[in-house]
Length: 247
Image (cartoon, rainbow, N blue to C red; front, side):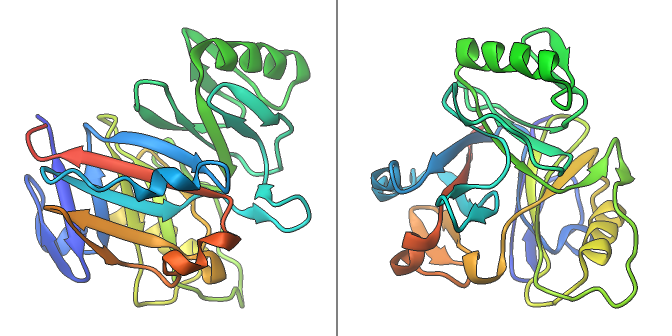
């Protein structure tokens, strides 16, 4: 059964889930079409209007590197590995040419019928060759939930911030969880997501001064983040998720 859920602030519209249980979910669809826009080269694509029959979410994706102005960690742009060296983080977000998206553990990435350990050079090189054939896009971040279990531990005195988390459900649905307006530790945000939604995989998205969030429904667009369009010059990548109402 196809599902779509959209929450604005503390109001939720849900099919098959109670609003109180999913109150912080900005987006959830098992038929989402995903894209990663790499900035500034693809900034012009942000001018595309949202379809009137769809809900579209645009959010900051991976962390940005200040010294080389590019996403941090492993980066593959439509099959082209512009930064094929992974960071220590364990989360990988893959967008296929078809628009299908998935979240993976860096040590066990399923693609094209194979399973790759990107921590090992030979396996990583095979993965990059497969990625070029399939023309996938890849960004990397902290993995927060792995196979339904928390992949981080509580740290005493950890700082609190507004958190935004990209997650995947057991039926392949892709969603975004946002703690706004509350500031939580990363552990508490992941724990809350695990208890309320129960995803199989989840990774952290960049926030703070890089917090861009734009939500479009029925052709109308509103900001749900800190940065406006005028602040896009500091971003290196944006994740776009789209779900049509008929899907």
